[in-house]
Length: 297
Image 1: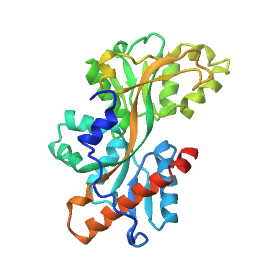
Image 2: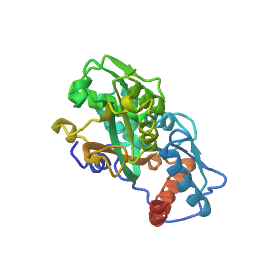
Image 3: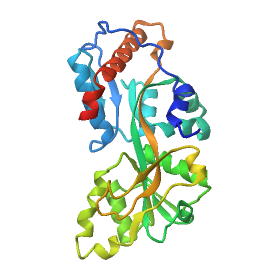
């Protein structure tokens, strides 16, 4: 994969939908379609709810569901649950195709299609100042998110690219707890994938102003991610002073794309598949027609 990761995914794993059918009656109210997103406090579910609200105004019912993250979303689209749609990180699909040891899952992602690309999500490598490059994570304790999350997959992909083996993969901490663990020294670093500015890191300004914690906080920073090997698979970006007031400089990082995907219902011939196919085509049109509203909110 090159810098335009999302474009290549659209051509290969996420071939564009071929069922962009004009608006017709889709029996939406009687046959709602599920969309799996993310945690209740995350960005994905907010996107899902706004899209569902717009769709409902045009007679298309979308049931927005919480989830454990990108990998969980793919598993649930694969299941018998009503989950024809999901928001995921683009690199998760590539990771499954190239590195998963589950042949059934690898085959399944070939039946997923890109409905709409959303926004970039920056990779935040937050660590104590003894960590100056990602290679310094060798033999360290790193918080990487829950095992069903895109955050986990992105972290593992970075370790694979850079041939790094941390001493401990910490997967039982919520994001705020992971940041606190970095500040206290309980873990050496955390990797967090989210579109900047992230409230998690914006709120650390409160920690900086606490005299009892300031000295610990001053020993942390964002680690640059600009290695050539990483830039072959991710898009270059930056995080810094314009994103987080407490941070005193800009550092290079990389980003993944958040994308809305769906199952390729065009493959089936039953009334159910045809209905879902029309619904996804209608949803794609609704997103396009309301893009300015979605950007504004």
